[in-house]
Amino acid sequence: MSAPVDRTYDDISLRSAGLVLRAPGVGDVPDIVRACRDPLTQQWLPLPNPYDESHAFGFVTEQARAVWRSGFGIVRAIERDGEFAGMIDLKKTDWRGGTTEIGYWVSPDHRGHGLAGRAARLLGDWAIREQGMERVEIRSATGNLGSQKAALAAGYRQEGVLRSAGYTHTGRVDLVIFGKTSADL
Image 1 (cartoon, rainbow, N blue to C red):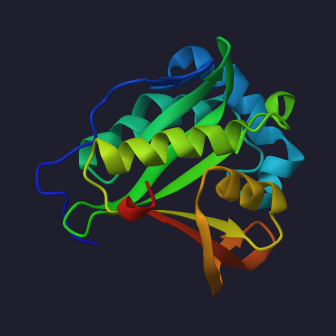
Image 2 (cartoon, rainbow, N blue to C red):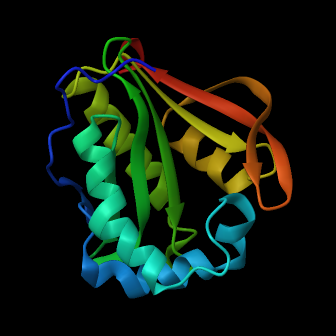
Image 3 (spheres, rainbow, N blue to C red):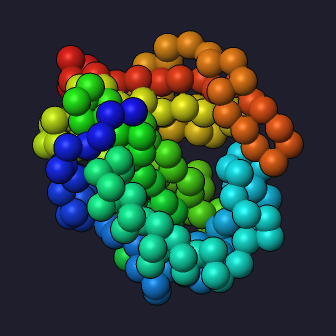
């Protein structure tokens, strides 16, 4: 991956019809802990297990800011009608190549409302239109049908399967890759 060459994403909040993507803060720690302890979240993401307050606190106070400062991504909390509802990020950004990847999870009490898809559309389209990306990808474990549904709802095209390209607590997994390019907007 090439160095970001003095480039970072604009550190702003994005808004769309009751949905806000904003920087996570210390006030989100209890909600993050609850969501990251959820069995479904743990099934698909290789998060610490058990997940505790120190993990969430370090994530919002150090890791999220470090990712942004490095130029390789940006982390946003998903807020629905004023309530914390999940997390979304851009990661593995290659500014020279104009590519990045989206990752997301939604809190159990906010699932089933299309939030991941709406958030992925908002963040990915912003990355292309406002930040100069040419391609945004979403990668999802082949068994994670909810994540795949969200990628399709966000307007990403399924492009194939990357064998043994990811991992969970139970081992290696194949990943379905979805892509959106500037030509798709």
